[in-house]
Length: 111
Image 1 (cartoon, helix red, strand yellow):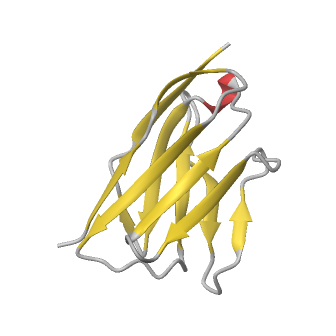
Image 2: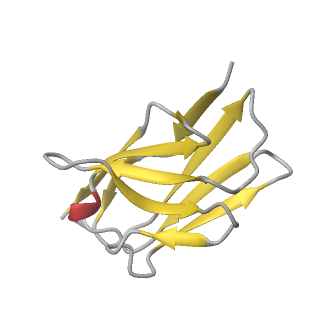
């Protein structure tokens, strides 16, 4: 049974940084067709950053160089490094891999 678990969310001031972690059980991360999405209050779920089928990274338009997905093959973890956070980045961040979703971790950015 595949399970994805996100962690690392929390409350941070605008301009700050966080690192989210996605851990998997029942799946070995290939770092293709997997990534991070988010759902902000009142909005639909949207792409943050993903490793596409060829392993190239694609970003949501709002990222603007502030976020980077990082893969750790040795530990079978995927991170999302987030810098220069803005209040508009507030939301629940989800890990997605090969059709599976985690339950999300809440990020709150205060102004």
